[in-house]
Image 1 (cartoon, rainbow, N blue to C red):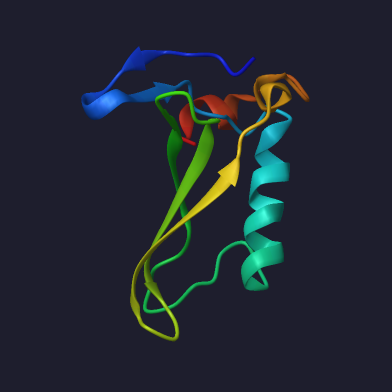
Image 2 (cartoon, helix red, strand yellow):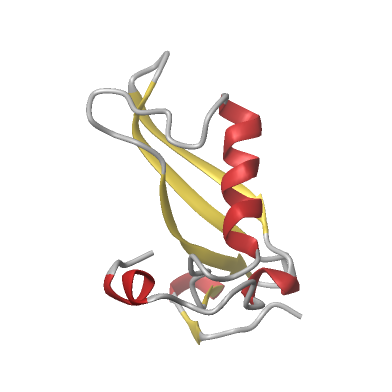
Length: 103
């Protein structure tokens, strides 16, 4: 079961963020790379950003990513990656760098 954190407006539930040391980190960024050719897609100084993990009502949780300037439209785009309960498992111990950099 995907961990639940707190309720948001309009029936949206925010879940704890997936961190760099969690097993889901590489998996969800790998899904972005599969869909768009690489995980960053840097364009006009913008790249994909992990915005958090959410669910709507009884719908499965999704990891939400945002790009502010994705070609060919050059506009804002959202991409959702299906969350898995194992995404929050520790794949490794966090390092000092992980703890000082927001994920």
